[in-house]
Image (cartoon, rainbow, N blue to C red; front, side, top):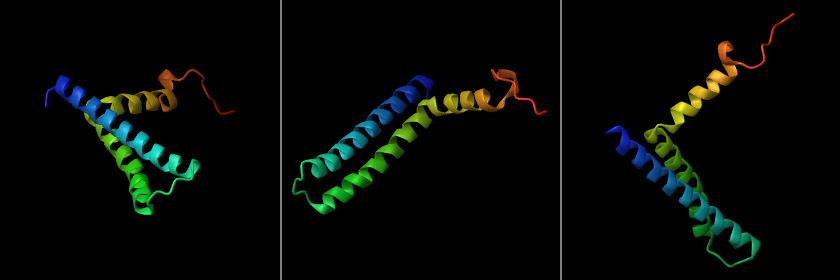
Length: 91
């Protein structure tokens, strides 16, 4: 897959995963807040949809190339001494 198509496909998956998480969370929370008589099976499916949405979002981040850049930056910021702002020296 070419880089531009992978980036677009990753963004689409990230959007679908985020939408699935928001819809699942809204269904569960609205059912509890407004005391609606919702099916327990659908509530369980909605809770599972939250985790499925998170996995879809992570897959999109991995395909789109966003995850690797963030991981590398976090590693550089926290563990590579050349890029640290504060030099921690032991006495």
